[in-house]
Length: 355
Image (cartoon, rainbow, N blue to C red; front, top):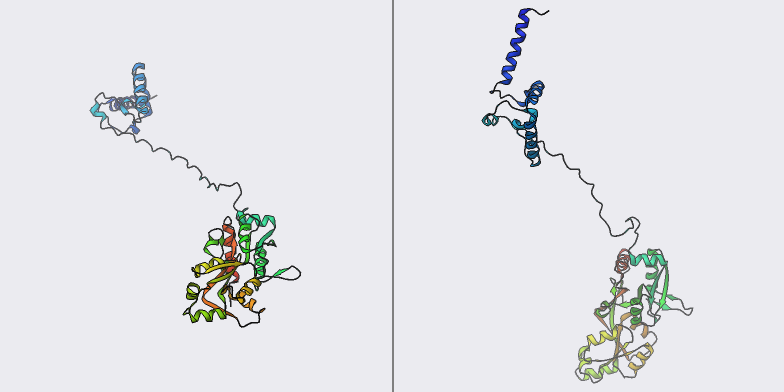
């Protein structure tokens, strides 16, 4: 059994603890309040006060405020003086947990086809799906660009270029013969052919209808004149081409029908009378007959025609600063095919200057 002194020490400590914890001047930290004190205080609070305090605490929590320690049932203070409560530390509201970040949505490409499946642009993919490249070519002989042999086979530089482009596309080549150069543009716009590779000269008029590649050949322009009529014009003080086609009485000039030289003759010599005929045989015969003073074409074509005419009456004049830019015609609805052709011409360096 406990001795008298031990019981005295026990009760003394018990009374001291109760006096200190019940004292109005207690200002310790809420964390230092023992659980026994909290439970004892909760039992002393009446049910009515407990309900009122709980309602106030809930109301303050809904408004987002921090509950007061003096009004919390779990941490009730023994002082009724509000000044004492002002010295109590406030609880710090913990920061809200970070919101989960949603995974980044991949960009929508606008197509259900995966990018790695798309191997070519639509205009090129259509040719590859068909398996052949349709190239329009004019059957009128234009050496060295294209010449139709007795067997009906067309050969020349244009055909070699068409074969190279078809091979780069990994398709076969099909040549489509078109009556003349202007009809090749109609065929291209109607979708009957994919390209025009037929000694096609780039002009502003054609560029307004179709797409033109970079030049794959440049040819100097040439005028073929009747030597006798030129001598007569010189006797009337018409010493230059511009003076001849402006002031000489016979200012008629011929050009091959369906070529760019019809409009080019009108541009170079606005006062001249420009006529057109389809066959070179008729052009040469009318110049020799002095019906017209001459014709305009490229240097290669003029030299080729002079091989079949043994006469001194014809005078060729080369315009050294005037070049025809020979291009590939592409549909205006096939821009990627145009890039492909340009890249082929640049990569294989097929551009040349013919004299």
